[in-house]
Amino acid sequence: MAVSYKTQQVQDVEVFYREAGSKEAPVLLLLHGFPSSSHMFRDLIPLLADRYRVIAPDLPGFGRTSSPARGEFPYTFDKLAAVMTGFTEALGLSRYALYVFDYGAPIGFRMATANPDRISAIISQNGNAYIEGFSDAWTAWEAYWRDPSAQNREACRASLSPEVIENWQY
Image (cartoon, helix red, strand yellow):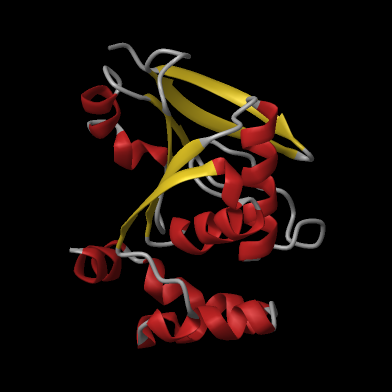
């Protein structure tokens, strides 16, 4: 089944997403991990599209979704969940299953907590629902979340090298 590539304006964010499957089928919303995008689901989407309407957005600041300026957009899980909830509303999704991976989990769990009647199922792969689930690899990022200074931002760069990402994720 063919995958469509679309965008949807949500507040000040242009959300890029991949979609496949019948509009009448049950909806499966795929929320990707860090530092990835909906591209991580490129092989999974066609496998599910014969039974589900599969929608995989890029989160704000990832992939092809716009990246609002840090001073104008708080990159918190609460804000990301609000944008993704707005995304589902803009698409007219009243009920859907969530597949959450890694960084997508705290976003999806917030969506489910805020609107439990919209969620038909939750599928979690390596998803943390709590801060204790983060490893020591997140220490620099946690400092940056608390204080988004240039110094703390620079400390995060080391964790984004291809070598670290490859060893960390695989």
